Amino acid sequence: MKAKQSIEDLVKELLGGSVRAAGRLITLVEANDSLVPDIMKLIYPHSGNAYVIGFTGAPGAGKSTLVGKLAKLLDSKGKKVAIIAIDPSSPFTGGALLGDRIRMMEDVGIKQNVFIRSLGSRGEMGGLSEATYRVANVLDAFGKEFIFVETVGTGQAEIEVTKLADSVIVVLSPGMGDEIQTLKAGTMEIGDIFVLNKADQAGAESISASIQTALHWAAKHGERMPTLVKTVAIKEQGIEDLWKELELHRAYLIESGQLKIRREKRIRMEVCKLMEDKLARHFNKFTCESPDFEQGIKEVSTDNKNPCQQAEILLETFMSFLKQGDSEK
Image (cartoon, rainbow, N blue to C red; front, side):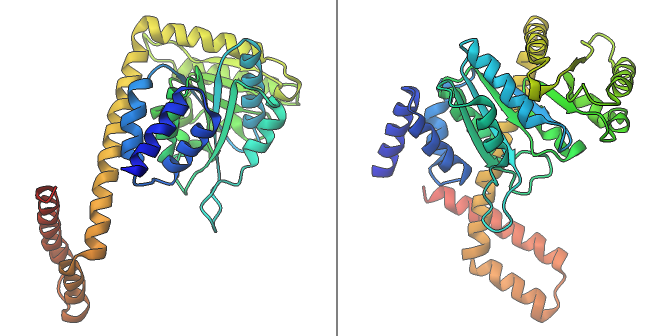
């Protein structure tokens, strides 16, 4: 009860605007602490108000700089912004390497209304760690109006961000082979807004024409065609244009009812992930503590029993293990 009371106090502080409480709760959520279910129960009623914007694209396109400059612009307009920067995880500690956070802090500066947090990708190919969804809920309850999620940047594997974001921005730049990448269906389908960053470099006009052509052919009947914005983020050029496009896309989603549909899909995904997580906890306990599981493995290794057949037997044993656990509550 003491630990639970501590969580309740932290959530109260979070709702009161405490940066320290926000950081502490995010740390617990990212670590998948056993108190996560209690945390989510307390903060979820206070979430659902933030607008989530995903940023994806190949490494080197300037995503971090773009995100930082856009956050700086929104801060100047009095908006409360949070940035979740997904960095590659350290192979030794599993933690984020913090490169994006350092660059963004330099771009944004010390701003009261901008909260920046790096998360490790934890090896997720989709560009987002599982904790990202829960961290977004914490920041939502924290009162942030806009949450930026920048993926780790591994090209077309970044589709996971579409399940979390209300608007998805694909960042491209000249001279990186993006002309070919943009023509691939997977990349074209995830973006609501395409940003050609470093638009002052050679080859920008060529890739701009390629993107426009690809957007035209990829447009679906009855749906809003994705738009293209040119920026030079490091010089803060085109950032205001990007914000205007985001406002237009947000208005379209609200008026068309698509925002509600996207968020219902997000809720479905969140519930499924929570169910999977709880099931995984029980399964790990079963494999670590059940003598039946150990005996089953031993029979395969020493008695040459069929692994497939043994897996079926152990699955039935696991189901009984689950029922027994429920009856003991």
